[in-house]
Image 1 (cartoon, rainbow, N blue to C red):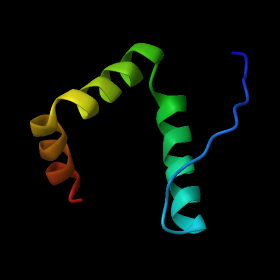
Image 2: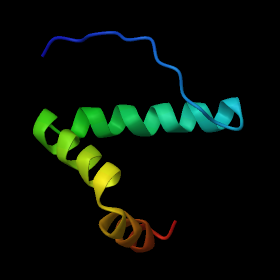
Image 3: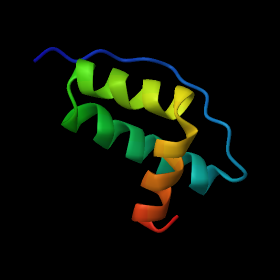
Image 4: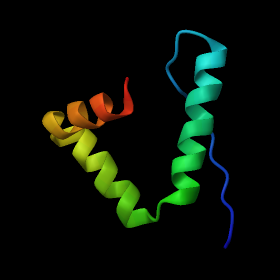
Length: 60
């Protein structure tokens, strides 16, 4: 598979938090295909109930 590079800005309270977010995003991008990742983003943007349930399940 071909690799592409992007320059991104991430809002975070500290640099450590920003690095953790970037690592998590990289993991999601490498483990989910385009359709799955897009669907996840859609649910997070438009379905606060499912998002809240997922956060509760994850313990966050």
